[in-house]
Picture 1 (cartoon, helix red, strand yellow):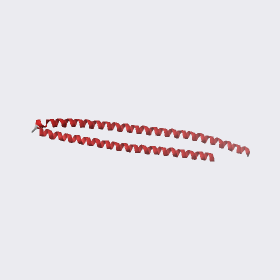
Picture 2 (cartoon, helix red, strand yellow):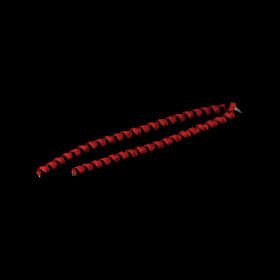
Picture 3 (tube, one colour):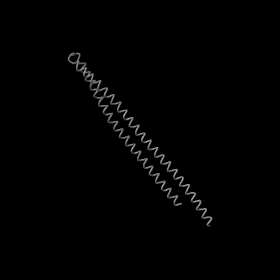
Picture 4 (cartoon, rainbow, N blue to C red):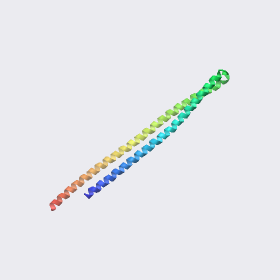
Length: 155
């Protein structure tokens, strides 16, 4: 019985260690998700800044267009440059937004895959330990039965 109790105590310690590893993995996953969210917020702030700059360029374009009515020839070059700058900034903003979203998706998928692998590993460890404990418990039952039979024969 004391060996059975020791085996059960060992099994409980192993199970607690597995639970601690699982909680540690979950904590790291939560920290990684928070880090990804922070990174995404930073990148979104960058997109907002680019969009604000695009908006500013659009306003500048409007002012130039109004002034062109009075002095069309002298401001034609400025309008063309403003249009080029607006297109360039819009393309940069679209490209940056697309890249940031793609990166965020890839990072989230990688974290999810890693967490799934960790959980699968922990499940396998737990299943292995449970099989080991069941085998140990069965051996102890047989030993106890044999010992009881021997004691009955001796008595």
